Image 1: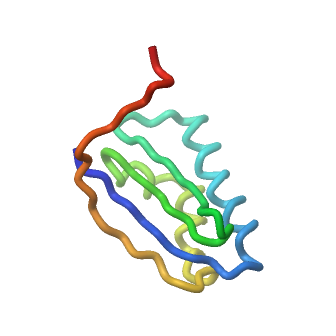
Image 2 (image 1 turned 45 degrees about the vertical axis):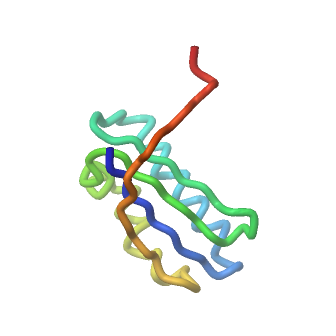
Length: 98
């Protein structure tokens, strides 16, 4: 499986706005429940570095109005611009599932 990973750092005064916009994407995903994609987003300990992971069809995200609002303005919030790369999943374990 191939995973798309995006990492960037926002200006401190933009961190909460970025979180709000990311949460809106997840709210829309929860409502629409599109098939073919898994998406995770995290903010690192510094509070301003965000990492997004997409498994599957990333085009599904680009079609969402909430994601479009997020993506159109992300550059304005960034201190370090988004860097996108593919990652090959070597293995995964989730002990939370039966």
